[in-house]
Image (cartoon, rainbow, N blue to C red; front, side, top):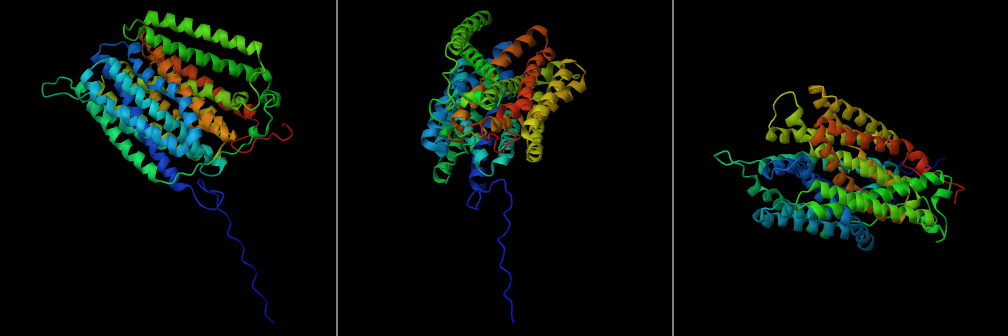
Length: 509
């Protein structure tokens, strides 16, 4: 008598960062989209070297040179909502191609801008490139979070952002080569060769646009963990779902209004004062515009507190707080990046030239890249919001050490701040769009819009540095990192989830 062999068991499914529900993989789309992170890291790295170039070529103060950062982040602010709307209409692939074409237009604009040789012409090119990068960030950041199991969303976005760090290493090197070049007599030729790396970017992104046009990029929807699409239109907001007290959600909404009012005030300030470089006039316009808009917004919230219904992403405090956290994180990051060269040339224990400091900026971005790679591993093992909170607190300490002027110890602290900043942007992004379903694209646009913090805070940091010294200017990023730490440690209560998995909202709908 023979016995039949036992039935074969199905192979155990391996947990993969890029596994799809059909048993396949999203590796190819992930690799293609990750190339975009390299692109905008390169562009951002050149921006930070450009600041010091214009200070010397045009004899600008630290606060005045921050207009470069302002123009860069203004592009993000102006284009974020249109990019989110277009991405929701034409999908991830269409949004990426639109962004690449706009970056190409901005890159090629630097050719005539070099001949015009006026500050406004260069700022226009910077703003146009940033507007194109807005499309890429609005699409690529949330897209990486859906290319596999959602518990690994923060790990995937940090891996992708690691290529951003690689681009940031090479950006300052290109800036050093072309912005600080000299002729045989030792005279600066930076103003004449500044267009070369940007024209190169224009050629590369046109090639990328063709590649993405031919490639298969699936349009994947994030899971609707908060059942936003299931709620009747008149349902009240998440403030009534016992996720957090109503006053907390309303306070976060008001803070978002304050940030928006300040951003619009900065734009008005720029229009009024950038040609004359009249900082006093710019401050007056900023205060009047921002104060008026904030008063109007506050009155609206008081008169119609229920105007924002459950279907609005703004009633979910883990998202609305993410826009605040991202605003302050990018504010801190852009300030540190923008004044890195100024700090080394003015505060280092030995004499460091502009060119040497620009080259050392690449070492800073190497620390940034190392933090991204190591952070991706940590985020796979530990709760992302806790890692975010701890890293932010460490950077509070680093900024404090920098302010204390401890010689080489403070210089080392500056480089370490790059390492601990590394995971913040992508982690805030993943935490902010968590569980929002189809509305993740819209939420992504607002989080990208919050990058406007990078336009505002360098102005403040530059002003503090002009008055009290470069080291004391680091009080600004120190305060910003405190806000980021608060978001990280409070995310679980704001979202109703222990980590990036389904939130525990049973019985609350």
